[in-house]
Length: 228
Image 1 (cartoon, helix red, strand yellow):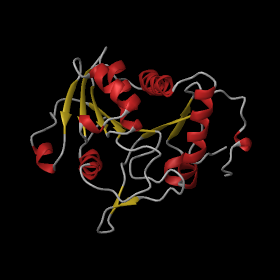
Image 2: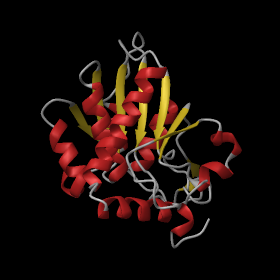
Image 3: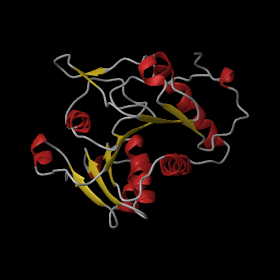
Image 4: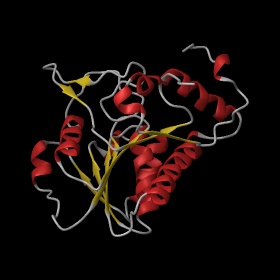
């Protein structure tokens, strides 16, 4: 059964009441993404680029970076500022800060300094925005989405929901001029249940893989306050 972003939040809160912290859920999420990619795709010898924002989706990306860094060259393109990171995302940022290359992007000029090599296969991981996207898309996240789409990669993966896609309606995000933006991906790894917006999008639904992140299953979705 598809769930809304609010229902997912309630499930995470329920898990916390059962003794599974938000930090543990973030760790489980990142590890599950790494395990799925590593089992189903040839990742050895590839360079991993994590496109990360400063929210929880970015936190998932930092966890993924840590796991891949044991086997691959990993770069985090961080479209945010360290001081804006909070709670679990900040903790996971600090865990990789000394071991993974992190390139902070604030303007489009920053990306001009960064060039992909033609003789290397890349795996892009979209951890810019997750289920929290309900607002007008702005810089520097817009730079991240556009750069993600412009560059070629062996595999492009979205974490939970492609950045720019509303998790509840499936609608694409837009900038202040009304132009549509969303990350174009080959694979969407979503957590616990497919999100309602993805189910509504026939062009995205077939790309979705659902992974378990350790949320207790004894609380039926039907008991949540927000009905699908």
